[in-house]
Image 1 (tube, helix red, strand yellow):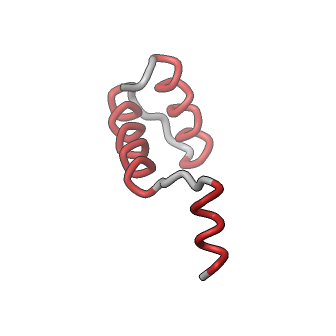
Image 2 (cartoon, rainbow, N blue to C red; image 1 turned 90 degrees about the vertical axis):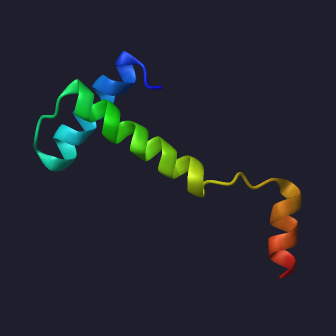
Image 3 (cartoon, rainbow, N blue to C red; image 1 turned 30 degrees about the vertical axis):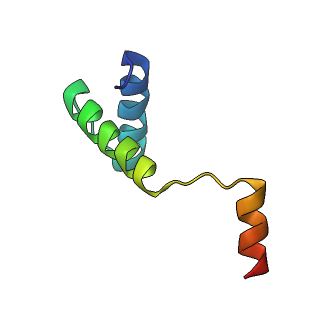
Length: 56
């Protein structure tokens, strides 16, 4: 769930990047898509993981 502040920030980012204004609903929808994408691909790297990666 995105807060009202996060939705406003996303709308501002969208405006600056794409040059178009979007509704709160569209900002919420696109923002949640972005959050789900990051959750799907992001894996924190801890010290042990980094050591294992460097050994390969």
